[in-house]
Image (tube, rainbow, N blue to C red; front, side, top):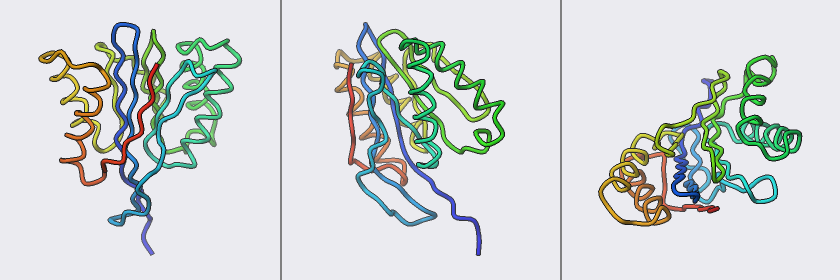
Length: 179
């Protein structure tokens, strides 16, 4: 029996002018089969001051969420420090290195993508996306921010709808969180 491949997800974060919105779709697939339609892939952390979202293995993502929450507590909600320290642990710990997930974390000041290879990527423009639909959502959000007067919530909604219309692993059962 072959390896089961879990695909999917689009998570998009937009940080602009002290506001943040994060959106995630709800689809979970195994191979070419949809197994869940309304998964919650974005959530608030650290006294509702930080937004997080994930793509990849759900169990691995929850492990990373727990680790990030611990780092946020340890560093009094300093997202930048917590992200860097989590990435160090992720890279050095043999068990963590095997985790297959990507995280997006954002607060009113910072936005990061954290990878299993120990990367902490801070986007230049306050836009971050992970998952199979990420390139579509990110491109749409960039165009809408540059060429419309839409709010970041409206931009997130439209960008996610565009991603869902292109990516077969992204549905329209969106969850939004805002700061």
